Image 1: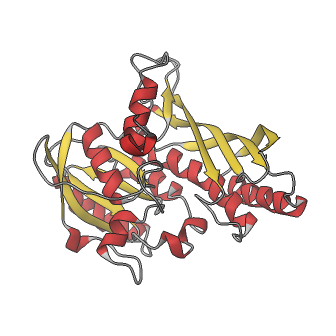
Image 2 (image 1 turned 180 degrees about the horizontal axis):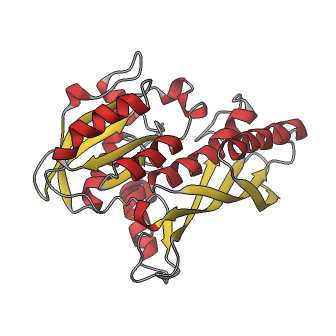
Length: 301
């Protein structure tokens, strides 16, 4: 009997998508950071759709500050909009909770969600509350709509061999609290898509070891990674930078000849945040391989 542990998250998604009707010619659909809806050439903007979920014991521990958990629940979605060059707009929040959950905990959870929505000019449009069976973990599900200017849309699937791969910020250390205290790179994404639009982009949520192969594969490419160049978070090893996940940094590709100008302009625009060249895309079937990163079904943590 084949189990979810046997096939892992990406293979499961591919199987499930094949079982249901879906847009046969989407700008972006299952497998990208957000779904993209095109209402036609008369519209200057495209609609973005995103859904995400947090589960107690998987994405946060019982002792975690509920306000920080609320921030994380909403900020993960904002990060995915940023990865597409877009902006968040309307959120739907569903909470499934044990009946013994303290009301104060839920209120602080929503205060954290409110902190994030206020920070990124989004609003709560609705949601749902329900219970889970006794002894089950709490679940917070967040869905949202957003938008992106047609010329600013960034996809995972449009990189080319020979292009340079870069990452914002530092990698590793999520287990030490970073995963509850991060700022989505919305401001940086806005600047990138308007000043030096990447040829491909996504956010690093499952670890570079998982997400770099995803970007390269979506673009029909292989990749080469210079592990010596990885921007490590304080106290972190290369293995942690590759595999910890929940960095929520931007991973992008751009033409080699544009890199010097990008790096010079970036330092002026964001002097406190590194932007680091870590490798390049190569032809499919060539380059390196990476193992590790977060997989909900194939990995025990």
